[in-house]
Length: 244
Image 1 (cartoon, rainbow, N blue to C red):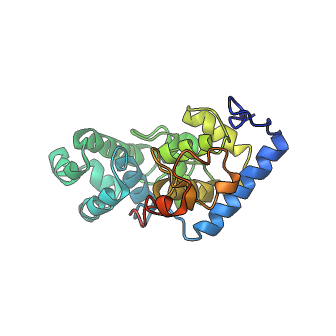
Image 2 (image 1 turned 30 degrees about the vertical axis):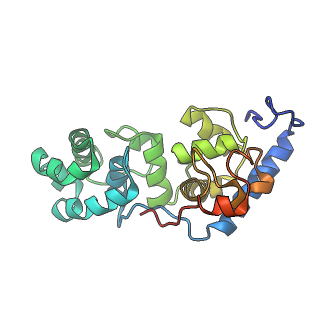
């Protein structure tokens, strides 16, 4: 059961489980209205491209990944092609992303695993995806939700931060966050909830100075006031997308 962070040390009346679930679902509905176009901001045309792009997005931006992957996929369009590549050639393409040697090892390793263990196809099950080099639950859920329409919660830094600010959870471990939020929000909404929280975190609910005074969730958020509450000041903090 999710820990009610709203009441801890704040002087607020403890929130019942039912009230927490209702508030969480209202937040989800409000975010759906605020970001009707929310989607994965990595460019891809098939599950393999999304898998590789998601692995490459670690410690860099989606925009930079999207600038880099066209050359990679043009030269190596299939797992078989990438697995057989010259590592130095792949490193040269991936160098703008940073950590390019480790990322080259990961994407070539997962490509070889796809070739050798899955017939060159990206598997559509979490338990299979997480056996691939460089693929954890977060990456697996991105692929499942956006390439296979299998609902999944993607706990990146934005999602975790907002879930704690909303007092949906007090956990910091991504797996525990995923489990607790999964108990609040219907399974069918998990993938879109992930997109909406990530979009809101990138645009409004920033880590250091959230734009509280410009937030559509102000009346539902127990952390309202962590950032400027004046509308004019808050509006200056809002970042316009897309971030792709």
